[in-house]
Amino acid sequence: METLKKESTANEPDYALITGASGGIGYELVTIMAAKGHNMVLVARSGDKLKQIADDLSKRFSIRVIPMAVNLGEESERINLVDNIRKNNIKITILVNNAGFGDAGYFADADWQKNERMIQLNITALTHLTREFLPDMIARNEGKILNVASIAGYLPGPLMSVYYATKSFVVSFSNALHSELRGTGVTVTTLSPGPVETNFFTEAGAADAKVNKLMKPASAQSVAHYGYIRMMQGKRKAIQGLNNKFMVFGLRFVPSFVTNYLLKRLHR
Ligand SMILES: NC(=O)c1ccc[n+]([C@@H]2O[C@H](COP(=O)([O-])OP(=O)(O)OC[C@H]3O[C@@H](n4cnc5c(N)ncnc54)[C@H](OP(=O)(O)O)[C@@H]3O)[C@@H](O)[C@H]2O)c1
Image (cartoon, rainbow, N blue to C red; front, side, top):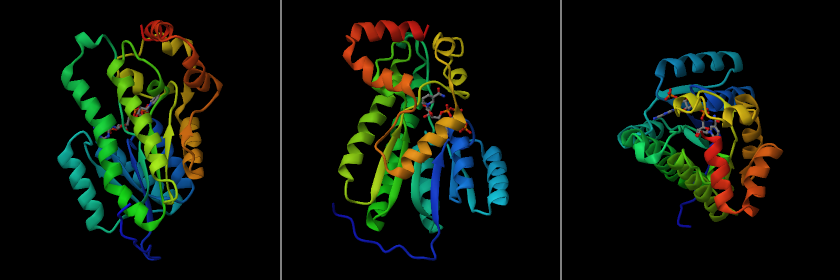
């Protein structure tokens, strides 16, 4: 790998960059990480919320927290974010690509603009930020990346087809990257939650879907805690709980017309 070695200097503090930090799993992650003493850059669109969170966490835990209001779906805003971080010599040693959203319904009826924004955020932004911060991590022989996928990334997703496909990308890309990075000191962990109690299903237009009644959602706090531990251990996968493990590993042995049928019913 053609990356110049770069010495880590003691006077450059380490930072974790967390996307989607203003709510849901991302907010719980930053709260956990603050308590562990990480300095952080918080990214989401809601600048006021981020500022409030940053003020609160920096006071409570005596850490540095920098809020950056960015629409990660826009390439120009991502470029500004990266430039800003470089100009201010902010050393990113942990990258958490968590921001993402879904869309429910028949693809033939889908709102294309919403689907395009979803692909831009769930796939392009995650890949772009990883590409920007990874070379410096490799050069310093240290770094952790946590990519938030979903058990959806392992399954077909009738009635949420594009969302499931974006998460398949995250699983495939992150798995491959974990392997490419062996021996570099940098690890990539894929967090794949099942349903979680957040704003996600409302945002996806799926608040009334059967999946919400049949599968008890996990708390965002427990998912964030599990993901944090697995990331710090440098593990490749983070799939919490027996039900989710069954969905990912057990359903492999079931013919795909059966999984399609089951998943379609769950998303009705
Ligand atoms: N909840 C579930 O059941 C579940 C299950 C499996 C996987 N996941 C995954 O977990 C991740 C977090 O979702 P969540 O459940 O915590 O959802 P959430 O409560 O809706 O939070 C989403 C976060 O992403 C941010 N965000 C959305 N669009 C953005 C954009 N264009 N640019 C920057 N930030 C943006 C939101 O902040 P702003 O609105 O302020 O921008 C918010 O902080 C997602 O990748 C999701 O696919 C969720």
